[in-house]
Image (cartoon, rainbow, N blue to C red; front, side, top):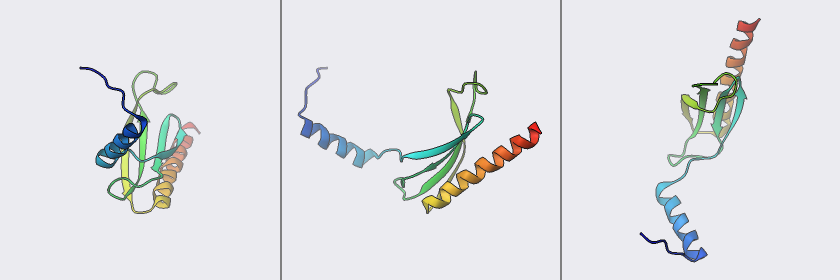
Length: 103
C-alpha cells in the first residue's frame, strides 16, 4: 500500500466529511475528587442531549496515581446547566460521604 500526499484543501474537506458522517465526541468538563471524575458535556451529542457522567479509578495505583477509569454513571439531559448541576450534586454527595467516613 502506498501513501499519497493530498493537498491541504482536500485533507480539510475529507476531515469535514468524516466528522459529518461519523461525528465526534462532545467536549466535556469535570471536577475531580479522590481520583473520581464528575463530568458533564459542554456540547450536545448527535442525539441533541447533554450528559452528566462519573468515572471511577481502577486497577493498580487507583488510589494514589490513577491511570485508568471506568464509567459508573451516565445520564442524559435536555439542558447543559442541568447536566452540570447533576455532576456537581454527585460530587457533593461523594465528598460528603467520604468526609463522614474519615471523621
